[in-house]
Image (cartoon, rainbow, N blue to C red; front, side):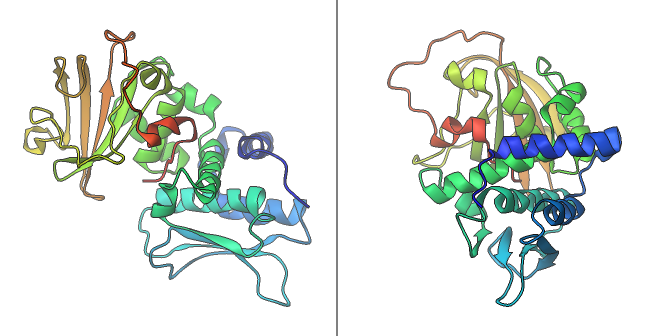
Length: 299
């Protein structure tokens, strides 16, 4: 039977079940148990029967149909992943595929980081829907807003507390906050002096505040930014105020954190409440930013 619910609707329905059963004790969501228990109750003839780690070189995880003669599905994550938060998100992502896409892909799916970037393909949209489900299930918006107000300018310490509460990576928690922030802000991930990718909050994107990274030469970090000078950081963290035309065409507050574990630098750019310049008609959005409302929240 074709599944007609949206990813968000599935996440909301499951959240209501967990909230009624466990209240605030439901965090972090035990995706492994939830996927197996719920699928057996809701789809007894087609449940998830196995969830485990495995050798998936080049893939984050996968949803697999049971071999001939057996019923159900298996969810496997890459056993080389060492981050429990990343594993938890991967499991939720594959559970989303099971709920939303198993009829569309009767043989299952394998999900790599590269697949996530193909926004212009049907398969890329499917991956993004699974991310939407995972983010909404693991980090419900109403609860997240109680931890970090949509009108606030959170630090990485505050967002790190959210990551711990929900059992996800700091990157995932930051992107989730960015989705419903009422402020103009950007999240920038860099390595070795260059921007890997950047996301804008909806309000920032509408006012033309973004960093284009797709289909352009590598984007260097501003030379005076904290992200470009990790030696200036105290304990791997720092905050600085910048004038116009450092990061963007307007002043900003930079919050930067070095993640030695992932060899990446995370930066939040807090902008003023209103744009001080108007985007030109020929300004071209980064295709990744255009998909902000369906943000990729993997590390």
